Length: 504
Ligand code: F6P
Image (cartoon, rainbow, N blue to C red; front, side, top):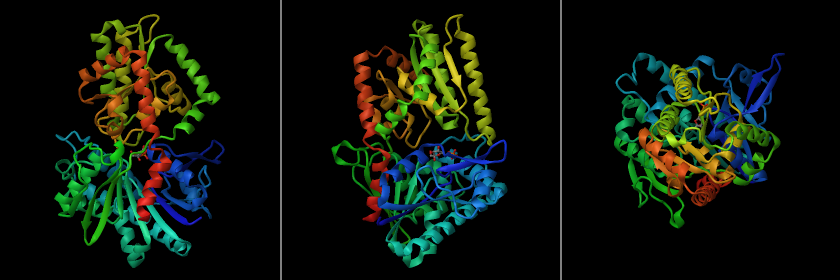
């Protein structure tokens, strides 16, 4: 074992719940970032000693955080949960990270009304700073504890922790030279014209925070480019872009959409900007899909659909996922192409997300309402055109992907998108992928997907039609090519590449 790795993220690899009897049970954290980092770390095996620092997200987590000796995740990695005061955590996570930064980076604001940065937001921002400081303090402590033990790599994840790399560099002082600090952005990044909606000092502080890292990683070249453009325009930083740097460009030879995107020099420090698309661990995913629980769900779904074609979507009910327009496109398909009535079923899995936020509760209700309208409009005694499931069920999601004839992934904007990659890997008979051009995954999957403008409902309906009429042969060919692309950047490679370039 010669490598020390510290990971920092808001959500950790394990989180706890109280049972009815007050006992505590741990469950693996959800989401693409957790899946990527967990599987990437698992592949390091004995080569690294890892500690993962995360926030206590619930009262149950706080009980664990206050105990002597932290928990371990499912792979045995020690987890240090930070007991952040609930008010500070709520303001930082809900009000800044999720209500301001998430909307900004995905360009989701309905701008006639939002955002509004007043005195209340300044208090929330102070909490975001305090929350980032708590992470930097914890990392600094862990770094000190591990100093003697060889190479140290620190991997900071996501928009919750933008300030951490700079805060950590300040704390480490000269010792920073012995540690490689990486920051990875799992979301899109917004171009300067949109990004500068933030108050100027906050916009600069976030960029400056990330530039404390030695390396800033993104899933797609266009997000890396937008980030560098923001650094140039808002900070006046010195930017050196790797050539071939137009949005969506293939950065490396041999057709891989990964590699260096450029470098930013600011305050005397150089941050390498790189593109590392995150794909899937195809063998592990297929193995999981062979399990009895997935097979049982597949049987039930197949029976519900009969011999009809299946259009599948699997998402959190997240505003960026564009579920409402996806349903509207399905409605338009049935309205304008009556030949599909009775011959297709749409399985729409829209799992709960961020229900603390009003916008998400309202959006969830719109999804439910629209689904009811579609069923009311087209159902017949022996055909239910739409099955909306809102209860999170991972094995059922895998089963639906395995059976899909068409997979619909139409986000308004998405850092990468794992479902677009998991679907073809899991597909039994080949699936056609209708994919938003605004997903980071479009950079790798474009050649074999049917790309759509996510705002264009008519174009999406037409793409669904094209996907449904595609010959078996073409669907299988495209699906196999999509699966091969998704499998080319497994988490082990995604994380390994980052660690290797930090070592350089
Ligand atoms: O898109 C980046 C990401 O970290 C996802 O991995 C994750 O699903 C989301 O953002 C954060 O979600 P949550 O607020 O539920 O932790």
